[in-house]
Length: 215
Image 1 (cartoon, one colour):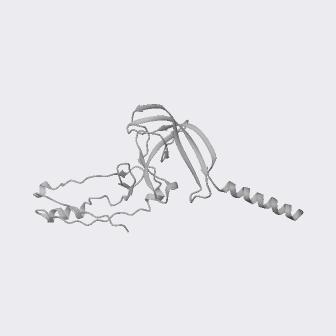
Image 2: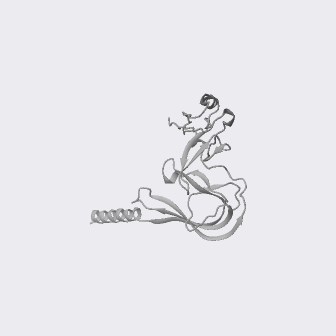
Image 3: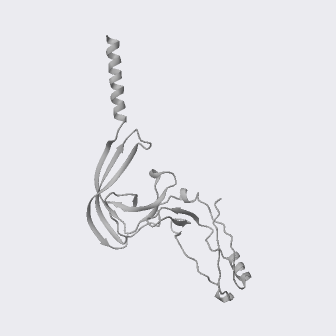
């Protein structure tokens, strides 16, 4: 009888433990106030997959001087050029039946203020150096169709169209994928358009084609 009772107790314990591991449950909940910067920035989101880059909200918690990031705030409608103070909830979940069992969701509770201003001390990006230093440096080829093309070709040899010391990659943007080039935390380039600069060479029309080669 004792062995039978021990078996039943063990079975009940295992069943209870299994129930705790299945299904979604809340592991933590908190509410707090954030300052949301007037501009979004590219950032690295580790929770959404390896090497996933997207625009993120730069935010500051109360009594903090450091800008941090949030990728999503449910119910929050952001307008560029305005700095916000908002109250949000942060709920952490656990579900062992999912591929990614633990996650956190943020939801807007209240917009406290909305002020048209440029946020101060905002970083150019939120991408760690260890990430962008691993990205490729560009090489380029060119083809020129123009009068006096030798002059243009010589200039292209000596003056690269793309800065070759920058690391280039794409990131997810609300308007579609955009490219970003980073040399360091201060030197950052975004989407750009290149114009002809050879009127002194008697060029009537010039088309320059360049390719970034991924090593």
